[in-house]
Image 1 (cartoon, helix red, strand yellow):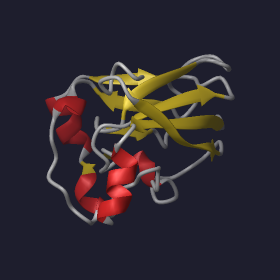
Image 2 (cartoon, rainbow, N blue to C red):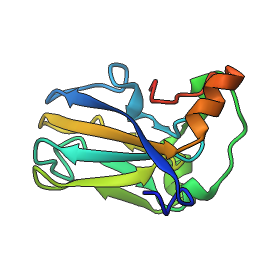
Image 3 (cartoon, rainbow, N blue to C red):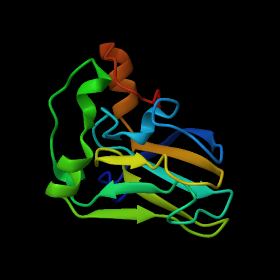
Image 4 (cartoon, helix red, strand yellow):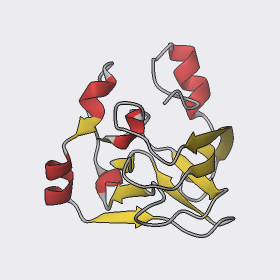
Length: 150
């Protein structure tokens, strides 16, 4: 983690996310393709349940999209992308696995939690930032999730 951020990283928050067996995109805002509006940030997902790639509400990530810079905007709706755009512009990866395993990715990448599925999903999400980032964001009074507000 520290190497990804150039040597200095901080664990800056964690939360437990529960998705029931059935969930709609209206109930689960992260079901829409998006980036987290926070620049480079790593999230580690620890799977508390086995996450099946079809039925377990897996996370999907648009490969290589973390390398893009996005214009700042206050409205999160502007950080959402149409499925046809994402699948046409990027190869996507489905992240799933057995209970007790996990995955980590940069939330500057376009990603989503899939609403389709029939199995619950419980994960612990651990968030890492470059060490100086959150203090600077607070000092400047910027409205950027740091730690997560998503």
